[in-house]
Image (cartoon, rainbow, N blue to C red; front, side):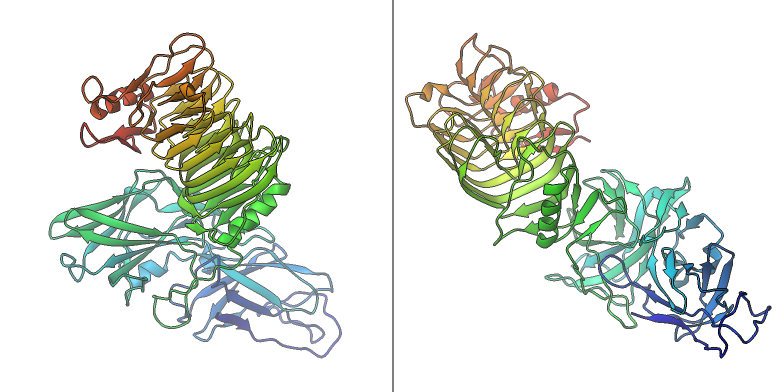
Length: 615
């Protein structure tokens, strides 16, 4: 970490009641306020563009919200310029910004052509929060980068030339923004992107980055205005031998100030293979741009309002979970895949204390989440979340190799993602094992145990489920009890073994007409005399109603195992003639509707479809 120091002076007299500049010399009866300014290089922010002060940079300081005073840095980081003297013994406040030309402005811009080092570096904006300094102390200021940074690593390969043409954006990036300086105690200011948009030609780094398991031929970097980019945005284009390769964002993303977003790209003849690593980096000291040390800190950051955790390690996720037990509205966003091996997970929320926040997996995976409970009782809803409340959202998350080994004394809803759900669960996937014993009158589901309202959409489970004597077991949902419940665009490809009602999608449905465009290819086994309550789509349908385009395969029975009022039409078996996966895919997409965020896609009549983004 480099430091900028203003040389301290100690004067001989007691106190001075006036502040002076070089043009207004003080009497020799006071003490000069001294400044130590460092640039944050750990955890949450990147360091300077090349980790050095070249000399001549201008830094502006504002003292007690007065006028901005300019200082000039030399190559060693010393500041020379305006002197400031204590007026009295009251504390003062100090805020800094670099370059000094940004002090009086609310706007900032980055160059569209950052191929030269000067244009690349010119986009770097640093600022501090407002720091309170007590009399007699130095003003210790920490500058943090207020723009974001994008890094593109191109893997060496047979068709990659020495100098591929790389472009960031497709005339869709905000190049200007309105910047509000950080407040007291805040690391970063806030941004409102401006109307001027364009593409960016990035700067080629002097040395390729180092990426584990990859040989990088060339690396590029660009400074960008913090902004929100929608899924489908054309982000990176690479022109090689007249062929243009383009990478589109698979998910919405928010570029945050001070963060580095890294894309490692392998160029193949058939297209791009992109490894996204939005690592929050710390750069090593030195004269090159290829530092790779990662300072994971506590594994998470917290938004200024305290409502959202951004998590990038297992410790960070456990810290969020612990905090959420006391504040069930805490949001969480993942920035990395997380392995919970060696930890025991405690469900977040229960029947009486429901989770009401937003958990955004951001396309990432939590692996090896484990819950071991022997004596659950009524109210102990069990899953990653105990109960998800009406206004809550769980989205874009994969639970891989989840392990639930639980027993209950009476009816308990159990699901890998949520025991109970009244909110919205969207675009989530589950694999692993769910083993349940002694849960009479209970509900077990591959995604959710029980719903009385809410939505499960675009979710898939391949879990192996042993429901024991639980009353209702389903590949996606154990059971539901209200017409407000929505299950759409979901699928199951795992296995279920249980003693009571078993369904490929849901074990029990009170009303069925809100299940749309779903299918099951799971292996279903009912070990009791109630085997007739096993269905390829629903095990037990308690009031006759009609599904919309739901299909099953791999189970030699009915689509609805038992219906106590009517037949429950709308569930169809893939028989290879009347119904194929090709015709089923078309029917399911029609049922989901043209505005559906995801649609089914299959390659041939014999292959079950997968969900893809609706283009």
